[in-house]
Length: 107
Length: 116
Image 1 (spheres, each protein chain N blue to C red):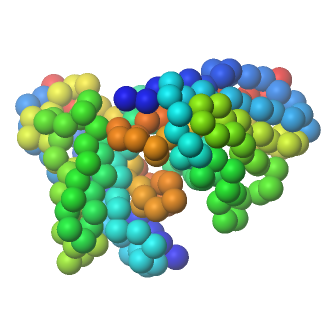
Image 2: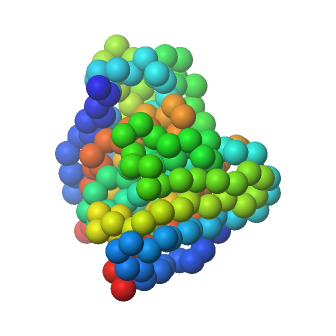
Image 3: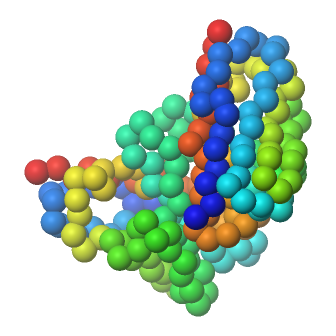
């Protein structure tokens, strides 16, 4: 199975900060990656698909990039509602797998 | 607008069986695939498998194959997750998700508690 390793596992940031989360795949997955946001006690929400396509209705503060094995999710200016856990997921090969998550909390 | 509505929370004893459901309504024409995702308490997301609502074609994560069965009833646009013999380690929230460009829409989750 393809392993996805997110870094960091957690980070503390302030409102207005630019935040970057990395997801590294154990083998090449083209651009078949998605990013999700999950707040405590809530359902995960799709942010980005196909590595860089913004889901309808998602703020343009979020952006994704990368291809092959290295991917990033960037939040351009962190807002209070962005404090959450973020997951990457690959769709290139079965079984589809998730990264372990990156928790973003308030500094 | 697409909605996925899951069945309610369940409490079972080890060894008991259980079937939970996920019903799709609204704009489901984008995709016929429904996936199931497990989230154990305080842990991350794990993809369990997916099913095509129209032909029941199913793909399982090997980590779950043999322990759960994914099925469908296309007459009511529903997918199901079935255990024949639950274990305490099955305690988790189970989400269904419409699978199109990614996991585009999610059900509200079903909490399954397995305890003697």
